[in-house]
Amino acid sequence: MTAFTTLDSLRAACLDLPGGDEAAAGAVAARQARLTKPPGSLGRLEELAAWMARWQRRAMPGLERVEVLIFAGNHGVVARGVSPYPPSVTAQMVANYAAGGAAINQLARLAGAALRVVPLALDTPTGDFTEGPAMEEGDFLAAVSMGHAALRPDTELLCLGEMGIGNTTAAAALAAALFGGGGHRWAGRGTGVDDSGLARKRAAVDAALARHPEARRDPLHAARTLGGREMAAMLGAALAARQQGVPVLLDGYVCLAAVAPLARLCPDGLDHARAAHRSAEAGCATLLAALGMEPLLDLGLRLGEASGAALAVPLLRAALACHAGMATFAEAGVSDREA
Figure 1: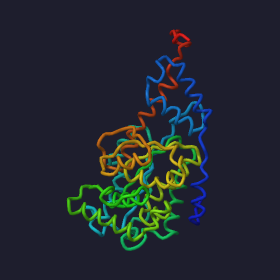
Figure 2: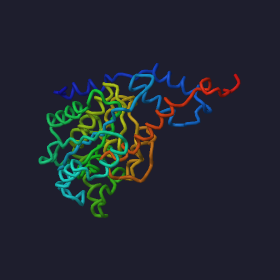
Figure 3: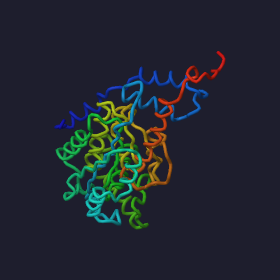
Figure 4: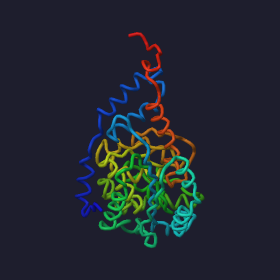
C-alpha cells in the first residue's frame, strides 16, 4: 500500500497532479465532427466521450471495468443528536450491501459495475469535532492511504460513494471550512432530522468551526479535523484515480465535500471527476456551484451509497456507444455540410 506518512507528503501529492491526454481528447473531437449528425447535436454526450478519453489517456475509451467503491465510517458527532439513526446502522448497512439487499446492489448490477464496500474502524467512531479533532494526523493519513490503495489498477471508471451515520453533518462542516459560511448555509436534514435535530446539526457545525479556526486556512487540516474516515478514504481514492488515469463519477453531498480539498489545493484538482447528480440534500447545489460542477442528473436523490454515481454510468455507456458505433459521413455515404 502506498502510504502517506506525513501531511506534507500528502500535500505534495495533491499539488503534483498529472494532466490528461489532450491528444486523445482531440482525436475524439475530430471523430465527433465526422459522425452522421449535426455538430454538437449529442450535447454533453460528446463532451463526456472526450472527457473519458482525456483521463483514460486513449483515443477510444472503454467501460469494460467499472467499479463502484463505497467507504463506510462512523462519526463521534452523532452523540450531539444530529441524526435520527444510531451509529450501529452503518455496520448493519454494510452487511446489507454484502447480502445484496441495498439500492446500490441493484443499481450497480444494472450499470454493469462491480461493487466493493470498505468499512473503516466502524467500532471506533471519529472524535466529536465540537470538542476536538475528528481524527489525529496518523488516523487521517491511514484512512487516506487506505482509500488510495483501494483503487484497482485496471479500473476504467470509478464511482465513489459512502455510508456513515452522521456524515452529512461532517460534510456540512467541511464545506463551510472550505468555502465559507456556517451551519445555516450548509447543514440540511440528512436522513430526516426534525426541526430540533436540524438546529442541533447547525449548532454542531458552528461549534466545530469555532473550535478549529485553522481549518478555514488549510484544506487538509479541515479534512482531518472536521471530516470522517470514509471521507478521507474517498479523498485518497480520488487522488489515486488522478495519478493512475481513471475518470471518476462523484456521488452526492458527502462525496463532493470529501474530495473538495483537492480542488481547494489545486485549481484543476477535480478535472478528472464529474458530479453524477445534484442531491436533494440542502447545501449540495451550493457546493456544486462552489466547485464549478454541472451535475449529469437531477432526480431528487438523497440516499448516498454511490446511488447517483451508478445511475450515471449508463449515460457514459451511451456516450461511448455513439462515439464508437456511429458511422462517419463517408462510411454511411451521407452528404456532409458544404464547406
